Length: 193
Image 1: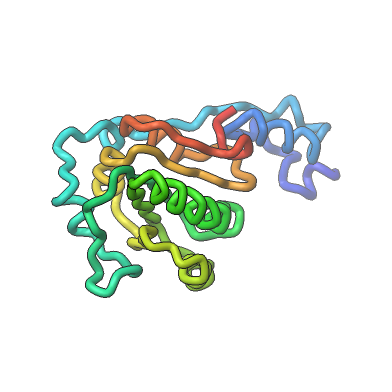
Image 2: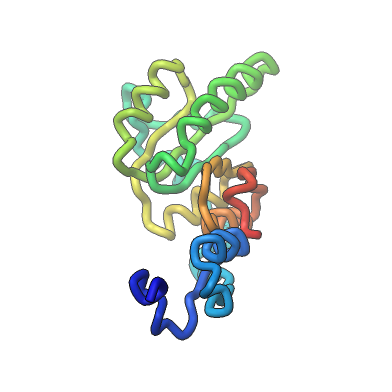
């Protein structure tokens, strides 16, 4: 009866996408653990791959930044950091911005410039932009939502993706970034387990 009241009584199998999610489900519904099946997530290889046609001037030059007067992202950077995702608290974008303050300054001390491109939108957009302004981030650019072709090209030009999610069962953007040919730094809670 308890399982039926939670919608699990007549369920043949409940699918989860990570070991972490399976463990959490088993804690919540110990009597239904035999009904839990791990089905690992995947990505569309026709959409996410190293795009050798991606050109910095064409791709990054076409993006509109909300951090510069002319709306253009300066192309004179040495390294490119990318975040792609929904602007929600669990995504940890506030942590990324705090980190950007540190690595922008460290790179500047070394005579180098790093650009951070933040792709996405969501309910925290205004507060994140306010945080970036308060941190006086010079090379961090919010560019809005982009389609998968645009994301692939941005990812193909990136030197690294930062995915600081606080709690996410499977960060699909992790494997999409790797498929586009660059390392991905994420918290343990984000990584596919």
